[in-house]
Image (cartoon, one colour):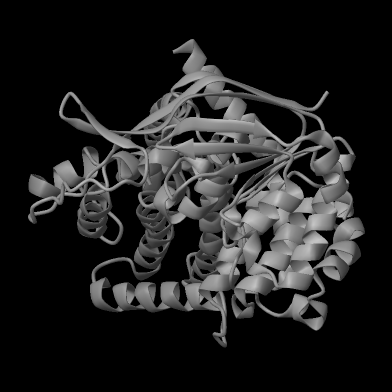
Length: 246
Length: 263
């Protein structure tokens, strides 16, 4: 059964300051987690007591100001960051889309990048070749697929990254806000694919500032501020259902 | 400590299952480094030949055995180039891989193996150059040359551990990049790469006996230069390699989850 369960997850990490001769600027802004001191060391409290539970078919939208902990939370869910307290229990095959450039080599062609990305995700060469035509078709990159990745626009890169990440049917898909980089037509296509994924009883966690994307894709909404959960709301089922199908 | 070792072995076994990833990435690295150049990776062979040519031209004296010195210096330089490149590239390894480490769940050992494969591919060009030089030097091929193979294998087996230790050093202590860079530059002269030790005293005595690099060079060089299996250097190199593996496993097990916050 595909599920995500977080219990009082906190993440604190030490900040390593660069050696500098200039006076540090200690004016605190309203963004980001809390920077505290412990034994003379700077510690960032990026997440604090985050608990929630998601079941198959849930689509969670993470909202909050810059630095609220959205990406950090996604990275905890993906297993890149180990929480300093609390437990994370995840059932299901997870794939994630963070920064577009992560995991892509600028000098390699789009096609080669799909192969590398597939290998990194643990696919076999045969699986990659089998999925290749579909990924290329979905990305609509055409002949550009054999051109180095560095020549792609942000939108083209987003198309390739999204197509590759969703091609092997992840059960849980984590996405950072960059999805807005694609054009309207591609965003529409991406939304449809996310709907399909959720209908197949998958889970989507999407961090975004884009209200309309949030409205049309997500069934649940979690607001983070300074690393803490400020609100967790569930959309009425029938409304979410009609949205998903529209 | 048991938990740390378990973590390390878990990371390594996951990475070994992903061998296609590090082999593919290492090939990409080599390709990228020589992109748009006419000679491509053959530049590594040219670099080596230019260096060794200069050494032989400058340091060969009338009274030294010409073929013997050519073999001595050319083998020494192959191993030294390999060690120098491997160690210098290891220190900034994790910060160089920051985008992958912060964006994927690849085990850290994947990056270690990626660099290992890259260094081996690069070294194979100098090895090819070295073999050509040995054949041209007039030394005469002999079966004893095969005794170099255990030494070469030992160095290759030690490589992932050395890479890992220096990569962690670089992650925790960024100044290490410059310190190690300087040590390796000085090491070219303090290691018997192109000078031979004939029982001299003074600095050369210390630079020969107390320098771990000496033993790494000798395990490969001695069988070809003197026709004997270098038992003592082999044992010392094996001990150094084991020590590196022990430290590397403890570092990997204990700190692999911390690296992402350091880079």
